[in-house]
Image (cartoon, rainbow over all chains, first blue to last red; front, top):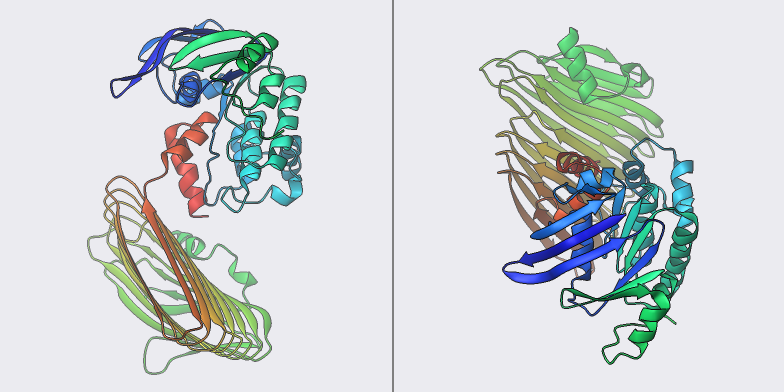
Length: 236
Length: 303
């Protein structure tokens, strides 16, 4: 369980997050949504340790992790998928999966992780993680690296960003797999109705604050009748 | 050879000398071991230090080792090696220089290698430079490449730390349908200085050159990269220079491409910068420390 207690974050004297109190329970899928600039990505970065709160505490299974570094949190099995997947020169998909698993694995084992994200594994395993891969392929490699860490908490920052309809459909299947077959807590920042519909709970944010937290149907219903509705359904 | 010599040799050519079809080992300015084959002859030059290496026409899968090792402090060794590759041959040449210098006098090796590839011949040339010990180690390789019609050469050049100073000059003239691929990897540390110069003349129709230079300058080291590619005919060039800088490392890149023919298609890309913060963050989110992440990124970059 991840718990945020009175968490605030300021950057260059600008308040980005204000007094956030949240609990993410085990084995549930949470969707965080809200308009651009509402602080969703910053919240995800605070949980991973990429940013540190200016006030408040973050607990993981009752352990205070507020001051732990990124890699210390990774060792606790907290993981984070970047909105824009990172590319490398000379690092292959096989290399990245070995780093994620933290041991030498052969290509066959590495292929299994790629298969889980719908990539025809043998074709990809020795490819460099660079821009010769499409946006959708990079995204799925990013998610495969998260699955390979066997996370207790997996955070996905707008996984739908920058990908086409075909890739989005495959991504939905990946999240179905994560929800049904992987134990742990999944936190997905999204604007997409299809992903929101998969969530157990939805967290609605606006201007650095939590506006609403609740069961999927309850929040979706409110969103649909809201003038400021922030959902996108263009992949439908 | 003593243990230092053996270590230097292993660093320069990471392959057993027994695998070579022909070889010549040069130690402290003198040839100490040589082997030739019915298809590959190695003849010492009469008027200066160096060798003429002759590969007969249609020789396939030959491997030649031409390593130089220097363990004598203060030695300045200059050597002129000419490789004459017969028509339709396909061979591998492993060369390079390893210097160990633990004393205050400079040790230096200037290797001038000329390659003459006849029609339709192919060469993979692997060159590695290595230095150990606290004394100054200077290595200045000059590579001149002449590619006749349909000839192809791949040159992989590596220098990872330990060489105090180097000026590396590569000149090439390409004729019709000739192809040259150069992959260069350099890592400088401490106060090391490395300068690389490429001068390429694409004279033949459909000749092409591809240069990929990856370099890392750390500590207070300094690197310069110059390239000058001239397209004199319908030709193609892609020059890519990528450099990572760390600490107080500095890199200067000066690309020059000159199209003298309307059908010449010449491209140059150069990027210099520190390791991208996001790359470090990504690997740290997988459990690596910042230092471990940096090492993996550099290792991959130079792979």
